[in-house]
Image (cartoon, rainbow, N blue to C red):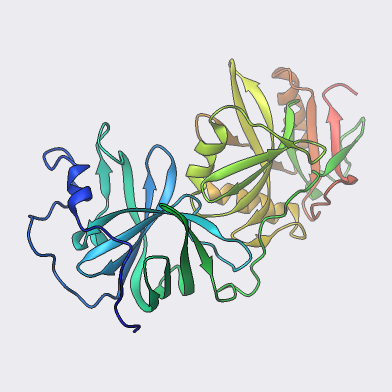
Length: 338
């Protein structure tokens, strides 16, 4: 362990000032000397406050020195992420999870995302270099100050997953060919409703979401949708394909494909497996839904689409990969009336 030096810390005075011990369930140790441990405990807490973020806390000199990470811990060394230095927390906070009441500082739910031991390589008021040993995060990281409370966190090791790939910067969606009739071999297809909405790809990462349109160009999503969807997936990066539709007077993101998840592109996976993976995410809320799909029963889906006044159905080959930007015969749009 490196020799002890000045830490970016101010004790627990600020922590106590910001909290009402009678209202918050957060630990509130009595004033007095802080305990001393081995300076080797870390915790990362997922904090669903006004905006989702992750709190990295490192035991140092009897307190937990803390940074708020708006997009979480970087999984690879290619991208630095913002780390905002916050007030020190008591050591008891390393085991805290619960609901901070509305109106209190940091109101919202707090859960432990990862915890473990760490080693210190460098620690001063402008740079903290550490090695984390957690169940979700392990490896060498450095936090470095960029100005005031703003720091950056950088992973120094290669990705823990050697096959990890970041989300693509831009992708054009796959398109369907128009056909008058349903395919003859319906057992080879999965069928979806054609919603007639605005095509949108959603790039979800670090609790945030950006959208692109049918041409792969960046567009704004409906107000509040991106943050809410990002909060649902949390730290799991994902690329979703879907449409913005209007249902019962409200905008809804109807999701029908999964193109990338947890650092692994899924474009070469068959449609059947991508849909099973999407269903497994259980994405359903007031602002978004996972679109239903029906293997091998196109006639019934088409009849239902006609009754619901939808434009048609989409027939997608169960064994087909996703072909970005291509109008492929593997996907067929069949109108409700030929």
